[in-house]
Image 1 (cartoon, one colour):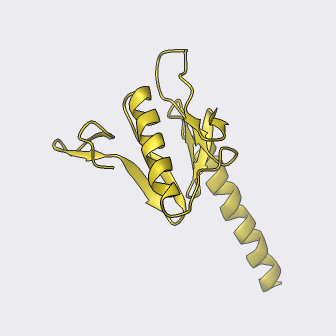
Image 2: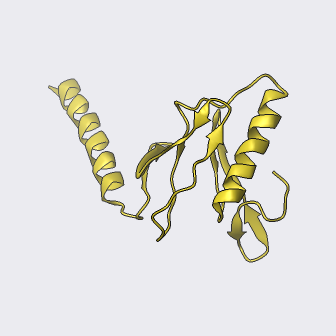
Length: 121
């Protein structure tokens, strides 16, 4: 994504447009219309190499004071807005709350320790 208004300002003069890992991508934008434009561009470029965006697996999260959400559309329809999403093992909440993320990590650690206990007995 190479448009100068895409993404968010990062380190004064750079812009962060997306976070990529394997087949996951998180698009970052300051304006809803820019997010839709970036999604459309991603969808077009993906189609050129035989890939498509799954509406069922795609989620949108908006961090704002406003209550009206503009739909983000892909070829199969509108993307679902969520209050919380897990990305690369971290729980991200639209209100910035980290409690869910901490609880998830503690539960995962407890499960590992439980398995270790079974090994040592």
